[in-house]
Length: 151
Ligand code: HEM
Picture 1 (cartoon, rainbow, N blue to C red):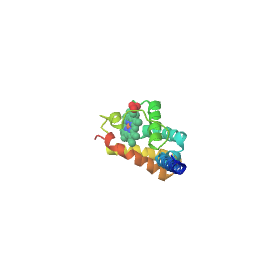
Picture 2: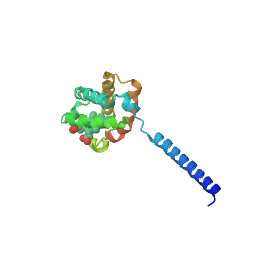
Picture 3: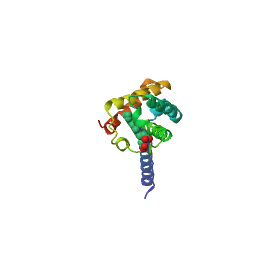
Picture 4: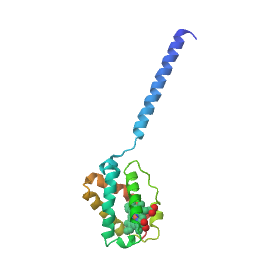
């Protein structure tokens, strides 16, 4: 290898490495999770407060509370916190049942679903969640209507 060739070759390799690492960096950035809903809800602490207001609202709501007569409040609350946190783009992992399995055979109607969604909206209002953020969380829950509703 003469010197000019070696120089050109080294130059080519350096440029190629820079190009590859730049494209990796750009890709890593674009793959970063959007956690704006999680932040807007006040992170795990805020979500926990919302759920702690949401569950009593469900239990007081005569449109749906009969469904929850045997519910284990603490376990259910912890599952909801993890589920909302994960849906909102936060650093949590929901490990409960999938929504079809969890609600199978309960004969839940669209009216029941909407009542529960309304209680969640109220719980978010009670915690001063901006409506833009609240609407985004509800939008994330919307695809669950199909597997949950069976009547
Ligand atoms: C977007 C709407 C809903 C979400 C995100 C949701 C979420 C959940 C979750 C995470 C669980 C726990 C699953 C597990 O045990 O692994 C659950 C259970 C349950 N859900 Fe829902 N749910 C929704 C709608 C509803 C509606 C509309 C009703 C009835 C009106 C309902 C009634 C129940 C009941 C009775 C249980 C069992 C509670 C227990 O025994 O601990 N859910 N739901």
